[in-house]
Image 1: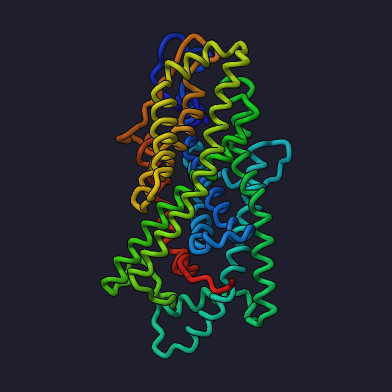
Image 2: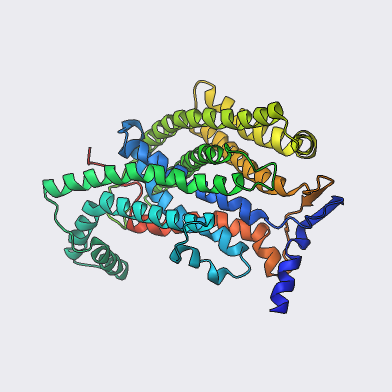
Length: 432
């Protein structure tokens, strides 16, 4: 007990550098994992919104990438909780937030919304792939030389089919209606899921940088932007792998043939990739415009109202964190990719470069909110600097350092690879 209390007191000492008089604050307690927490939940929400543009609003131009975005959103979902679990001193208690309803606690609301959202995404995927699941069962049952992987897939498909093997026209039509309903229901829940992260920060009255009613809206818009950008990059990369495999007649990098999807030529894959990346980039530009406008409005509003805390905020924004906010976040992460996407003749490579910069800009926005909000003391008489632990010397500096953050960032791609074996994200949609 005494040892645990001692660890809590010194939490943050390993990466905090103090400047002038910082009391009553002592350390930067919320580190890289709390930066990644809203970042990852934003990616989940953004990817789902992208898939819903096709399923709900019928945007046919996004037909091919919509299914990929839905499966990728499902792969991102388990990772949304990982940063919190790594940050907690008692991670075994983290599951309590999911299982213990508490309607006056903001963090408990996250558990309820997260579970609701997970159920919606899981149900939507089930309805989207129900026809494929039943057809896979029939195909694998009739396969004469069924191997061990085929037998495992057959068992999985039988379990997740839940006995619903009706492929009549009426049943498939009911599936499509269910998908549209769930996608429509999922949009406000996804926005609430990430708006909640902004709510957590925006409702902290003691912190002048976080306390703004615009914070949830800013978080929602930047979440959609980051989710779309990640989907464009991931889609382009996986399509490149598929083209490479198609040219060499290989399939071990992506399990297309394993699940029985149709083999396509490299030229066809290239044309689909170019079309989808260009179309999705247009929607990325729309959401980027909205997100940048809101963020600039927030700064202008703070300067115009000039409340008591503005003196210290001005020092933080225009001096202490000027490079991080105006050069790294707005310059490299917003203006530069915005121009790259606006220049005529957009190519897949240029779109991917722009999306990488967009993801960097959204990450810096999260960084500046979480770390920047803790950088000044409540007495407004000193600053603290956060140094990311690169080489860990114990479990704490690993979890809250570069190693822990890379673990979180790589996890969705590993999960996606295995989910894609069961629910092929590149399966051709023949429903419309």
